[in-house]
Image (cartoon, rainbow, N blue to C red; front, side, top):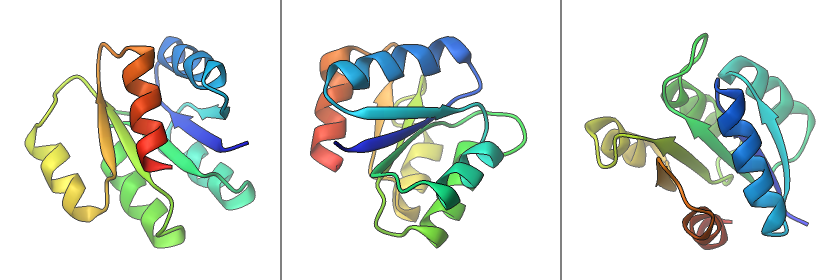
Length: 117
């Protein structure tokens, strides 16, 4: 079973994404910020990282860069309300695999995960 790490400072978003992913047949863990996520990534092998962009302590872009240094092949997907914002475009140049727009639907989340994992 593929294992995914969800990173978002909003607990409700983490819960909803975790439920969606588990319904789709994936195993999912969650972290509330980038620093916590990096510690989890160092100790548990994940197949994908799904992260919010705007978070305290370490934002999604910094987490993307650090996770790519450690695990270059692991796909990273952002969750965003901003669509094709400059941040997303720049992040794709840094190695972002894709993005999920808020509000998200289960079929869209599972499609993006399946295409990138």
